[in-house]
Amino acid sequence: MVDINPRPQKRLRTDPNLVDSPETASDPHCPSALLSSASVPLSRPPLSPGLKPLPPHVLLLALPALLLHPPTHEQYALSLFLSLKSIRLCLQLPALAPDVECYAWTALAEVGMRAIRSGFCKTGEHDWTMGLEEEHPILRHLRHHLSLLNAHFAFWRSNTRFPRAVLRRLISTFVPSDPPTIVYAAHLALITQLTSSPPASPFSHGKGADSSVSIQPHTNPPEVQAALTALINLSAIAAQNQHFSMLKLVAVLRLRVLVAAEMWDMVGDALEGAEKLLSLYLDTVVAHTRTHGFFSEYAPRITLHYAHLAHGLGDTHRAGTCYRVAAYVAGAGPVGAADANTGGFVAAAARAGEALLRIGLVAKRAAPNMASDSPVVMGEESHAPYLDESTIALTKDAIARCSASASAPLPALAELLSAALSPSQIIRSKSLLKHALALSGSAGDNHMRALVLAVVGAQYVHTAPEHAMEVLAVCETLGAGMGASEKKPAGTESEPSVCGVGNAALRLWVGERFLELFKRAGKEKRVQKQGEFNALYRSAVDVVRMGN
View 1 (cartoon, rainbow, N blue to C red):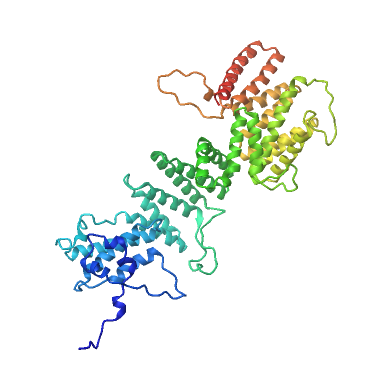
View 2: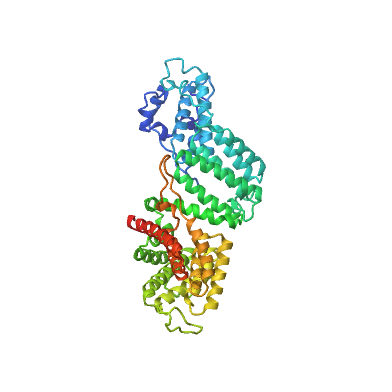
């Protein structure tokens, strides 16, 4: 008898990837119905030229809905087994998006509860349900993901108050057992929403508009303070967990927030803190950037840090080499190039550092040979008589680059270099140094202020000793505040140490000027006391340079 209503052929077709896969065929818990059908030779339907393969996570998450059967169906157990298998395969995929992962865990819980409710776990006929009731996942940890997604989607709909409240409520509910990644993600999401603006329209996607979140150039003061407070809390959590990479990220984010809010009075301290953290792990940064293949992007900045480190330790040869390499890697071009904007901040700082290094070395070598009655060449183009042409050309190039830069320390550095090129023009030199001192003071850069004050004090040592003493005293005070103090264990006597003298090299130079002025004034007691201080500073400098 011929069946007048045959079963459609498409119901007999099964995905060969799931049936013929060795993993499924060898699974001891696989239902017998599926194993019996695995021996049937099946053919893959031809793909249309216009169709593209679905992403794996989309296909695996769609299978449970396609395989769903009512509980009375004979293949109900098989549909549950394949649904659990597909969801577990989806959860094993790398780099799942948070919304996809939440959907997969939710689907796994729903299918698992359906299998438990059907009673398959209580009978011994279905091995694939063994341990399902005891090991069934709970969805508590998804609360954090769902809250983050809720805040993210609300922020993209230009609703700023609600997502911030959601994130603050989520942060307040964290317990020590919560994963650090979720805690960091919540804090970073709150900081991003406090310092960023949502897209212009939620319907701008797909129209060629940029849907990325942008940093606000001007942020309201309450939002800035809230972002800075959140950064402080995040830094404390990272320090408690000893996650130093997160500490460095917080330092960079704080600097970014201050620059975006145009709080320039705090940018200097933030930049100094960020660069201190970077310098502590300079070797680690080099290894990390080389391992992950982006060393070329950070090579100019890292080389500049090495130059500053060598310059501070007195290794002049290595410092000069690092300065030249940093300028070259940053794309500065040859000395005296027409375009002074090439290379940016790193190139300008490297050229200025090398120029100051060479000027200092020339002045140190020429000091014993300088006579008070040495001839001075006057004129508009007169320079220091002991500087060669290459040093003058390098200094002019550094002046052009620093003058063209908008970064706070570089314009003051340009004025200082200009004063170094015109020592014979006293009035012009003092005017340049006065302007440099004003620029460094407005930028809040105590390091630059100390350097400018040292040069100003040196100009007045022979002409106005009292004024020189006042200027050098301020310079010495600034030098004493540089550097970090050493924490000593309780019960130990406090003795002078290297870490307690601040910038030892600067204080030694100022102390030598003080000693010269005291000898000239005939103050024997002050000379003796200053000699003791200078001996301490000199020993500190020697210890640092010999130890490195």
